[in-house]
Length: 229
Image (cartoon, rainbow, N blue to C red; front, side, top):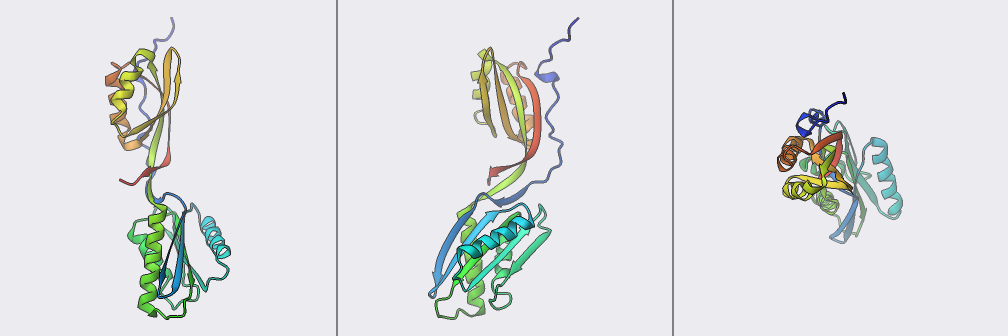
């Protein structure tokens, strides 16, 4: 006798018990600039996933601004920010690297790097003025890059009987998930992208909408970017 085909309620849930830790970081590379008392500050930011990548980013910033008087920077690496580096690059001690790093920390960001090029305009800013300028340069770089949250995310393959697909899709429309990889045949196959914490509720909604006829297939969990709420 063949095995009975299981319905959605009997399929195992995705790996929502995965304990991968999430973190906040920059969404993309970006650039911003402003002028303070004739000195131009050009700041670059980017997400990085290792100290080697952060150093490469700083080197790239140096190559992009060979005439700059200073290329100051800071970065934090690791989900807990365990690796932190900064440099005043010739500015008075504590007036550049520290303000950049403290601004990154104040925004709760890790796995990111900020480099600020300064073209001196002939007017001294003083230590307080420099610290405020570098903090501002970092802040506007972060705004230019945008912030995302890397969260544990389940990618779940599901199969839905074709007549029920529109019902299920409509039921999930206002749920915190994304449908992709949709294939239409006698049944509809699709992939649900959902934060691991939201997966049980999303799958329950899909089961309810399909009278438990949705089949839950393979799933995998990884850290993926979501917009900051």
